[in-house]
Amino acid sequence: MAQYILALLISLGIGFGVNSSIRIISDGDEALVARLGKYNRTLKPGLQFVLPVIEKIVHYDTLRERLLDIPKQEAITKDNVPLTIDALVFWKIQDMRKSFYDIQGVEDAIGNLVTTTLRAEVGLRNMEDMFSSINEINTALLHNIAEKTINWGVQVVRVDLQSIEPPAKVKLAMEAQRAAESQKKADISIAEGKAASIKVLAEVLNLDPNSREFLQFLIAKQFVDANQQISMSENAKVIFMDPSQLTEALTGLIDQDMSRVESQAAMRGKLFSKGNSHPKE
Image (tube, rainbow, N blue to C red):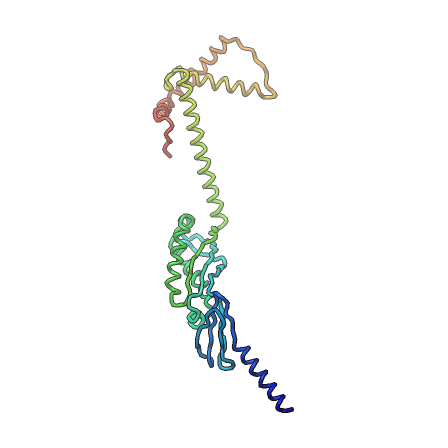
């Protein structure tokens, strides 16, 4: 009876030993084996054997590319503007032995290195340059980090700045500046449109745009347009006027305004002579 029990125990021990010594490493992964506490070998994908008791898998990890999300960091630009920056890092393990034995917490080490390098890069640029040189900053970060991690057994594949947020006051000033630039472009466009329409009108009337007759026509047109707008009002009143008196009134109005209009004729002549060229800003 004792012999049967002993044989059963031996069989169970052998089965447990064989079962614990067989390891299956998935494709794209690797494992590190230590024998009696010292590194022995790296297990590649496939069916692998580990000696029970004296050998142990101390680390199992993937070689696939992975993403590290760097928490938002505050960095100071060259012109002393604080910016809040969010970055992503894509990296992967190339030598698992180095990444495990030579660096304590390789992912945390990469995150700290990216944060330090990012602040240094931001400190080399003014705030306005930050938004126009994001690609250059990404390239510089990747180059600097790759140099410092060359002995870590890892490869930093890509660094991407996700967002750059200036302080609220600076953001409002930037929005106001963009609005002013848009309004400036709109005003220039309107002025160019008016200049073009006046030129076409002068050609239709076969008049010189700088002539007194054409300027009188423009003033009379403005007077008629103004009266037409007044007549469209709900409180408008109808006034009957003798055409001859209307002509005399317009003539008097024209004589009063001619001194002001003629002083602008030279400038307007330059605009007509240049056609639709853009005015100097």
